[in-house]
Image (cartoon, rainbow, N blue to C red; front, side):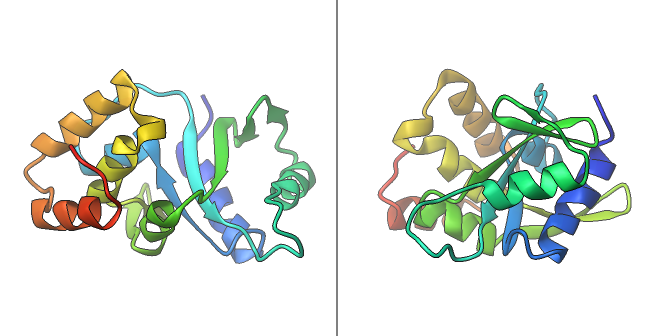
Length: 163
């Protein structure tokens, strides 16, 4: 695998260059910032794309950016500094909130926007995401002493989700 810190620098550049309005690292890579790491091979990045001229969501600007930086496509991933990275446009209000409220943390000297653990749990509890692997990750985060349970309960209520 490539350099995670170099991939995060590239994701920051993606925002700085205006290719995306904002982003937040989600999924298993986000978990490593909050609790024990879980096995994964890719980086998931939730993104706000600049407002398109039509209602059709397109990753064309990200594809062009990747190509101009020499990052090849590999199925649904872009190999950013050797790290398989999946850019996911925020699909709903929960993901929008997760990006807007992301914490800025440090990884090897690189600032990175990371989905907060309460939002990770909520994202894992969405009906379309309820796989055994994601339920196990949600359970792990629920046991983490730093989880703000009141905040999680408010998020779940606001988005009509249950544990």
